[in-house]
Image (cartoon, rainbow, N blue to C red):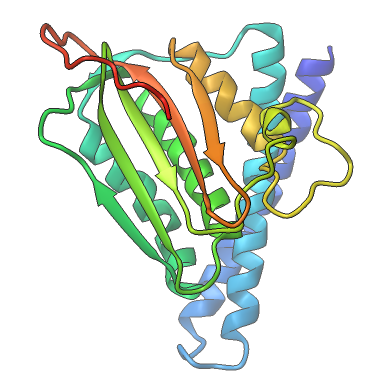
Length: 233
């Protein structure tokens, strides 16, 4: 009953948010690029998008906890997935501004995944990296072969995460007070659930003052010859 209630509330909330977003974007068409109200309209659309994602995260979190998260499986090339995730965060990147670099060797095989869900994971991790990376910083998105998997990583030049905080990053119930750079709250729990539903793993490597790198693996699709698994640093 709780899961159905959350799903219903989320659906109704997202319907109302869609009206806000559409209206704000229509107004932006009539406002000059450097107009006084442009920044406010952009803030409205960003906030509405964040609330919309939170509503979806609530539904996904309930599904993960109950073991009913639906994951499709198909063979998908990695590069279009990376490109889609980068495009989703592109407008925010331009506003900050930041540099996003993509590194993709030619030997990375297709992966067995739900394409939209992996885009969601990457966009969430990119959004988190952008939140804690200062203006002029750099975020690097990589994909590489790791044993029978493709290993993805998102590195930033932000403040880093203290060792005692890293185990809390993917918890369902985050502490009430999260120090700068500690994590993504509910979105991190959902991200972990999506990765594990694919048969992958997710973790973070970080040191205060030296940035953070989030890693996750997804099984390759039909790869007959694979490179040896790289040891985690």
